[in-house]
Amino acid sequence: MLGAGGALLAFRPVRRAVCPGSFDPVTNGHLDIIERAAGIHDEVVVAVLVNKTKSSLFTVPERIEMLQEATTKWPNVTVDSFYGLLVDFCRDRQIPVIVKGLRAVSDFEYEMQMSQMNYSLAGIDTLFMTTNPVHSFLSSSLVKEVATYGGDVSALVPAAAHGRLLARLREVAPRS
Ligand code: PNS
Image (tube, rainbow, N blue to C red; front, side, top):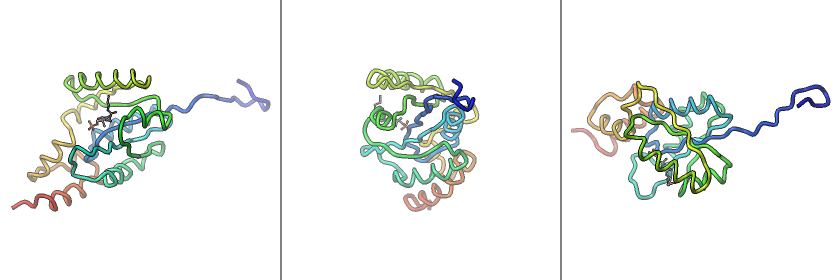
C-alpha cells in the first residue's frame, strides 16, 4: 500500500515463535535450532520450563543466564521461563508458533502427539526442524552423563555452559 509520502507501508504482523525446553543445560543442538528459528521469525522467545517434579542440575535462573549468554549474538532472541502449559505462555505472549528440533525418527512420535495436543488446545502450530546431523546424537542428559565421568563435552555445549557445567559437577559429584 502506498502512503501519502509514497512510502511503502507494510502492515505485516510480527512473526513470533517460541523455542521451549528444559535446557539443563543448553547444548549446541539447541542453539542450532534457536539460530535457525531466529532467521525466519521477527522475534524468538526461548522459554525454559519450570518443572517442579523433575530434578535438574541447574536452577531456572542459571539456565536462563546460560541461554542469555549464548544467544546475545542474535538480537531478536529473548529468554524467559514458564510454568504450566506451554499454550498458556504462548497465548499470554501472543506467540502463534512453537519451534521444535527433531533429532531422529524416535523423537517424532511424542513430538507429533504434543503438537496435536497444543493445536487442539489453542490452535498453536508447531514447526519442526530437523537438527543439523552433527548434533543429532546430542542431548542435555547425555552431556551431563559424559561430563560426570570426565568425558570432554567442550565441543557440545556453548562456552557459557561448559565452565558452569564442570563447576557444578565438581560441587555435586566430586570425582575420586
Ligand atoms: O527439553 P524438553 O524437556 O524435552 O522440553 C519439553 C517441553 C518443555 C517442551 C514440554 O515438556 C512442554 O511443553 N511442557 C510444558 C507443559 C505442557 O504444555 N504440557 C502439555 C504438552 S502437549
